[in-house]
Length: 375
Image (cartoon, rainbow, N blue to C red):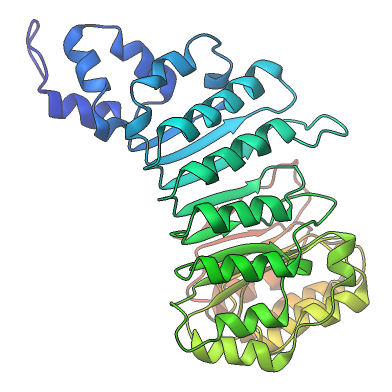
């Protein structure tokens, strides 16, 4: 510990400040000149998280960030769309980034709180467009937590402006899917190094799978598919042979499937195909859940690593979960948001040696149900 009157070395201050939330960085920079110099160091700002409470500090956020904006490489921005100060600050920050930060590498946007009814998010989405036009070095864009409809124009702007993209996640919570398969094809052609992609099911086509299976395609690691919109329910089945070709070309590919209540039973059977290398399966269906769990036990035993189930408790579901535990030895997480019988917990604890955490409640408890880590 430094003695009274002594000053910590600048490199030590930098290491401390880079872990501080934004409001504490602002306060630290006002302590003295040495701290202000350390707080302005590029290392402090390389990875920056701005939370909704920071966005609401009107008159503080943007002026303070202006001098450090060029140093921000990885930005996680959280805001509340229903709170005008938070939303306005987020929009202004993204617009300023578009004009100042061609070196931005990663952008993750997260909405918290409620979205106003009939809010299309045009101001936020226009700012994202501006960032995609300017940030030619952008490699990671995560829009999963935006509750607004994402469309072809945004995808095509990312394809034109961000050829170095490595990951793009568009599988957000929206009631309408507006990204056409043709736009995804253009994205795959314009961004040959893309390794991870999140989409609504209706945005994926057999032709896109063929592009991913091409011999000269860079390694592809993750495909996250959300099935929640009416368009997803009407999407045609993807050819088994196309999935098999992608799996041969990318043996390490992990597919994450999220099936929501809007998906009818006949659509579920089209989505769940034996050739798909499903690593994570999240089921929140309004109809039968037992069938999909049994299907996963039979066909995804070699690939399944995480299972999440939201359904009504039943003896049939318990039996399906026990079957899955017996067959999927590589499972690392299982989260079931209904009460299960003790034998289900025993099955996962004894037959899944790689299990790291689980949510398996034997009695009703107040929510939220938190996962139990495995020692």
